[in-house]
Length: 461
Image (cartoon, rainbow, N blue to C red; front, side, top):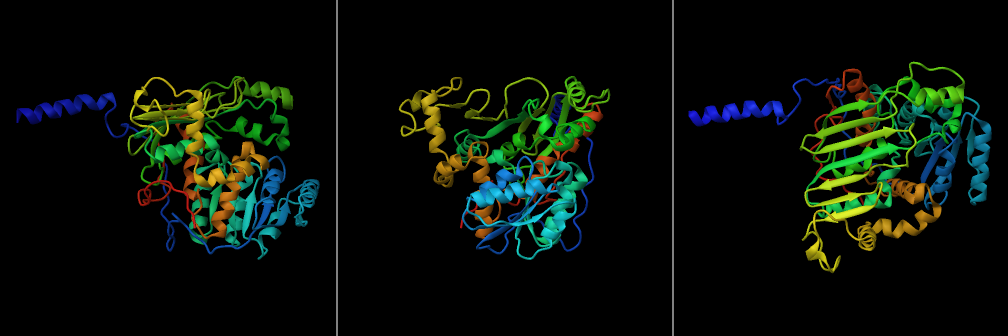
């Protein structure tokens, strides 16, 4: 009895010091019940497509580059080009001609022009590159008219939009993929492979960010739409480049899931100045802080640190780091790998028995390890990817994998639940910030199926 009482006292003493499973008070959002007759789309497959026939919506900043990349992937047919501005459509038509492709059918002149393209029965995939706020209605209309969709980041900005995309994908059985290119960057994809091979031991903590001063880019956003969104919304509104690679390393909804988050931000210092400079107006109620930091804890006791800052002068960084029980990787600000003694063998390092836990590998060995652990399909694509380009080649690998999976009837590398988990930081961080940095529960967007698939894997025929 005395032993039981002692243990009880110990438990009661430890709980206030953070060893409880969850915070005492946590804000939760509604998880809508799955509509009758729907099933989840984990590992969703569709009939293989010998030729992927695609239509593009949004030909401003990113659309033309996507058209150019698709033109250099075998087994694709660009059927439609759509933008509100007719001159943008014509510029992409000229691009197709330059690359030896036939002109596509053009759609322009109206914000509803995309519907005629989606109504066609000779298009399989709609590729959406518009501004953020128009992503969801375009994607929903396309899926409801029998098309798979690929949506630029972030695909959805609110929880209602996220659930709408999930329900539409589940109901129509159409792929809904977010075009998160950073999961295909060479460093991230090699480190993911290292983690899957156990080189870091158990991965415990990951970091990611979007730290990118946009002073040189604000004027390029049509009608200042991106600046306007920062003016009106508080929180990490552009989280996917940082969190995407992190979630793959942690097998989110493939054996683990994000449980809750806590966010903090700075005051808006530079935002109002940008508005004054570009729009010549005062903005005393600018919403987004210059920097937002978010801590996330998973069900399996892993942690994530995600940051967003597009307003302060600093070097570009996605802050990518992987911290394991036996190893470490970082891409910013310095590319580094570190492993405990015994984690490598003589084929990887002649000094493999003398590694230590506080010194990074020499640069030459780091470079060799990163090349060795590129997956075979990336090694095969690397030369062409770097030649075609798209943020150094990762955009081409992303499009290639999308086409490959559609051609072979395979599950896509990223599904609608990845989209949901990576986009939900926008609305959830705002809830946390507006409630004094309170813990906010992350919904289970799979509605109970997060542990059914074990481990992230690429699909191959």
